[in-house]
Image (cartoon, rainbow, N blue to C red):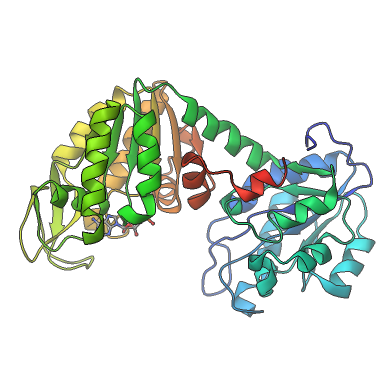
Length: 394
Ligand code: AMP
C-alpha cells in the first residue's frame, strides 16, 4: 500500500473510485454537493503533484444505462468546485473510455460514466474490473460509503495495481475518526442509535454494548424494546421477531455495565402522516390506534443532560420520523445538543444518511467533530467487520 501524501504522481494517471452518489432534482441538478466537495483534497493532491485524474463512481440504482442516472449531471458542479474543465466520457469501459484515458494529460480531469450501468460492477466481475483498470497507472479508493461492498471498482480492481494502490483522503480520515470513536474509553461514552429497524442495527448495538457507558435507543426501534419490557406501544412500528433479541440486549447491557436508555415519553400520531393529530404520552403507554413517532420533550431534556456530561458521542439514525415537522423535534434537538456539547470539548462522530441530513438541514455539520460519509459502511466498521474496500488496499 502506498501513501497518497508521499506518492510521486508525476505523469501518472490516477484512477480514483469516488462516491458521487448525489441527490438530483427533476431537472437533474445536484441538490447536495457534499460528497463531491469531500473528494477535493484527494483530487487536488494528485493534480498538484503532476498527475492526472480519472474519476469513477456509481449514481443511484440504475438497471442499465438510464439518462436520469448519468454522471454527466455532476460535470458542471465538479467544474465549479475544482475550477477546472472536466472531460466526460459516456461509458466507463470500452474503446471510448480507453481512448479518453490515453489522451488525458497531466493536470487534467476525466469523469467516466456511471459504473452501475453495468451489472458486472455490483457482481464484482473480474473481467469488468480489468477493463476499468486499463489505461491507469495507480488506483485510489476514496469511496468510504461503498467500502462495505466487494464490487469491481471498490475491491476487485485493487489487486490489478500491485503496490500502486492507496486510500484517498476521505478514506484515511474516515478510518482515523472511526478508530478514534471505537477506541475511546468506555467512561463517558454515549452512543445514540435511532432509525427504523432493530434488525438492521442489532449487530452494531451488540458491539456498542461492550464499548459504551450509555446506549440511547430511539426511533421506531425503541418501541420493540419497550414492548419487550411489557410496555404498551399501540400501533407503533414493532418487529415482533425481535422482541426476544431486545430482551437479550437489555440483559447483555447489565452484564457489561452499560446503561440502556429508552425514551421516557413519546410523541404519538394517529396516522403516519405529516398533518395527523398528535399527543404526548409516556413511551410505554401509547394507546391503541396511535403510533409513537418521536421522542417526547421530557426525553429530550434528559438526553441533553446525558450528552452534556459525555466525553465521546456517537450518533447514527434519527430518533423520530424527522421528515415530518411534527415528529422532527427530537432528531433536530439531538443534533443541536451534540453540536453544543462539541463546542464544549466533547468528541462527536455522526454518521448515517438521515442523521447527517438532519445536521445539514440545521446548518450544524461543521459543529460536530466528524461527519462520516458512510451509513452502512460506518455501521459495518463499528461492527468490527473488515470492509472489502479497505481490505483490498491492505
Ligand atoms: P434507518 O434507515 O434505519 O436509519 O431509519 C431511518 C428512518 O426511520 C427514517 O426515515 C425515519 O422516518 C424512520 N423512523 C424513525 N423513527 C420512527 C418511528 N418512531 N416510526 C416510524 N419510523 C421512524
